[in-house]
Image 1: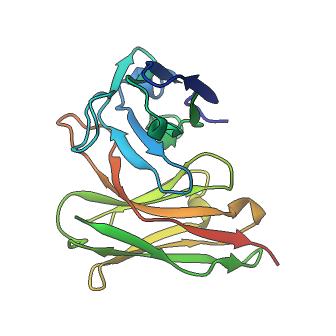
Image 2: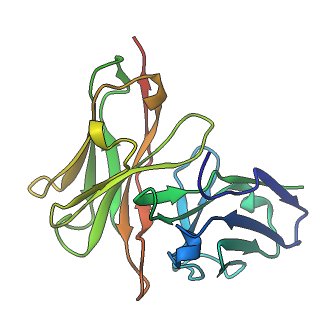
Length: 111
Length: 125
């Protein structure tokens, strides 16, 4: 059970917009620690998607965006494509646990 | 473009020590402000941060693993290593090495911008 809670699964049709939430508490996201997001395609290593809450590394399409408010963060994907089907993880820091923490992951299915 | 590659035994017996090495190419492990990291993923489950070591040699461990864990760095070989002692079946996972970096100005926690391909370690007799 992670201290960062993500929905186990989300789905959407091609072209649609989906959001993935990452809910924390006052000892992690609510304490103003950064949130990062990763995409893990089947059978591969995770790939950095969003860093510092809302920044995209070079090469990541602008269809991906991140936001943070209070004790939660969100990843939004617009113009959904079949290639976006993957697992997505949020990451932050937890002061109670004194370390980096990941959310439990969300499986995105493109219908 | 930095590249990371894990190496080590794929099978470890219970109670023994799991040892993995991450070889870094495309850049010096001792240059820049990087957190050389280990992350694991049990089969079918999510990611778990294990720990990281900074260029200075300072290391930061997941408190739940700290008593069994050592992460070290060998700048002469451009490698860093993981040793996890007294392993059990619960330590069976794909182990990833990764590079942590603080890219934003007010960085509070490094993000992992480069990853190895991962190596499966099974703990079984």
